[in-house]
Amino acid sequence: MSLSRYKFLFTKGLMLVTVLVFTSGVLAAEKKWYAFNEGLALAEKQNKSIMVDFYADWCHWCKVMDKNTFQDKVIAKKLADRFISIKLDAEDAGAKVQYEQKSYTNVQLTQAFGITGFPSLAFLDAKGKIITVLPGYVPPEEFINVLNYIDGKCWEQNVSFEDYLKNKDCGKKS
Image (cartoon, rainbow, N blue to C red; front, side, top):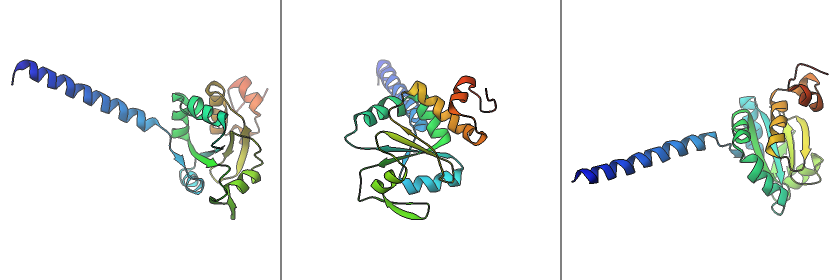
C-alpha cells in the first residue's frame, strides 16, 4: 500500500472519529421526553421538577416551540440536567394516565389542569404538585428565565416571577 493511501485512510478515520465524538457529546446533552406516569415516577426518584408540554398535533405554535425553544442548546441542556420533561398529546382521548390517585384520559387531565389552549406548559414539583401553568409560545430568551425561576424554587420562597426578573435572584424581594 502506498504512503498516499495510508494518508487517505488515516484522514478518513480521523474524520470519522471526530464526527462520532462530536455527535456523542451533542446527543448526551439532549433532553429525553417521558410519558406522563413514567416522568412523574422518575421526577420523584431524582427529586427534579417536572415540565409537562401539553400539545396538539395540529397546533402551529406547538411546532414552533419544539423547533425554536426546546431545541435551543441552552434550553435543551437546562431541561436535560435539571428537569423531567413530559410530552402529553392533549387531544388523545384513548391514552390513560394516573394523577393524584385518579385515572384520566389525556383530554380529562388537560381539563383538570385548566388548560384551554396550546401550547401550554405545566410545571410540577418533584412530588407532582402543580407549581404553575404557562400558556402560549415562549421564545428561548424568555423561557430560560422561567426555567431558572422554577429550578431556583423561587416560588417556594414567595418570590413573584416579576420580582425574580428584576433581580435574577430568588432571595431578594423588591
